[in-house]
Image (cartoon, rainbow, N blue to C red; front, side):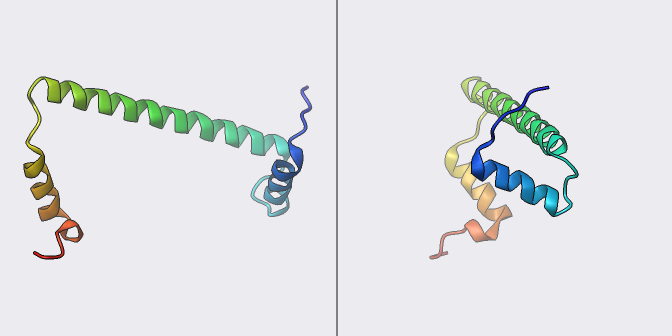
Length: 85
């Protein structure tokens, strides 16, 4: 078993989570934080892959002009329209 000093700030957060009833033990807090870290990393990998696909599409000439993209967004989301329109 590994024992580690979290420092006063992290220790207080962990204790608050346990005392609030959200978690029943320090182990549960650490397991959940590991799962959240894994989820976040998966989300970042998916985002990176999406950006890579978009860049590849642009390089392959599959993109649309920026003005056209903004017009489409402004039509779909009225709050993005210019104030002078």
